[in-house]
Length: 159
Image (cartoon, rainbow, N blue to C red; front, side, top):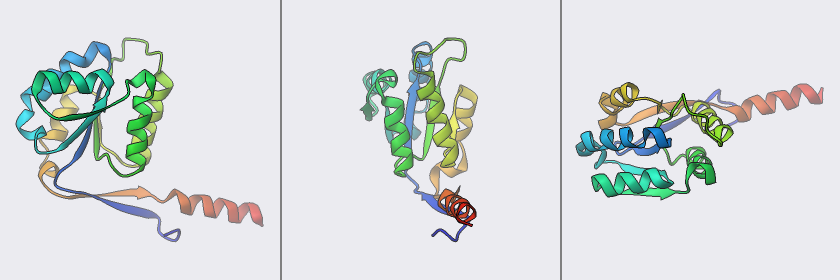
């Protein structure tokens, strides 16, 4: 495994989708989920704290809830990405509102990038992702093999 430049992961036909929204964007995400309920009900949904609860209550969609973002929910979603249990993220964040847990948000965005996870931060991108042909078929992601990079660096240091 260390010899390969990339590690391949296959997303199944049923996607594991994380739903997250800052307070000022929760209603927008709920409305988006309601409009796209027919598609979303065919996939596995999870989300952070209040967002997950509100989506489930308002739309009837089953959403597995984690902690609130400021209480570690963003980190829980990030760990699920690392474990290979999240296929993409819909995260309506409010760029005009200061967030006390901004480092957690940045960590989540970073880990999504490291693991080549599609992430939508606004309505237009969420629509493009959800209505993509890849939503109904398998998709293979290529993730840089950082174990190889680390092994190469250790080899250089050892010389």
